[in-house]
Image 1 (spheres, rainbow, N blue to C red):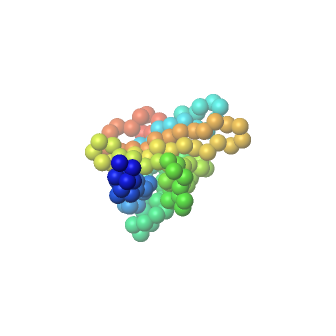
Image 2 (image 1 turned 90 degrees about the vertical axis):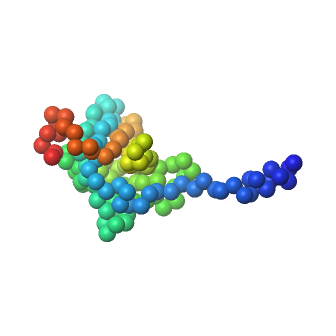
Image 3 (image 1 turned 180 degrees about the horizontal axis):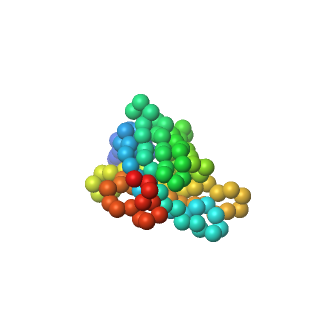
Length: 139
């Protein structure tokens, strides 16, 4: 029995963390979250994500938050974020997942400064819906 269990374990595929190809993320994204501060300042934006020649790093261009980038984490910790970079002045670390229609969603945390708490933000593909009033000029 022990030998059979060992054989099954050895034959099982290893579940490695991986990041989809860079062009999977290209497009316009809605962003919502809260800043890394004790005040929990809300964040909302529209971000365009582009590739650099079809590969990483990804270039981010936020209407309100500014420009930034995302790159693969060289040696991610087990269960840790696979992408890191910036969005404007915000240092971010992101997990990649998909929705039910296989569109990318980026769940990110914003690195705090000093004693602040971590900020959080989520980016999902824009479906062309009407923007909230604070983002009307981000078309």
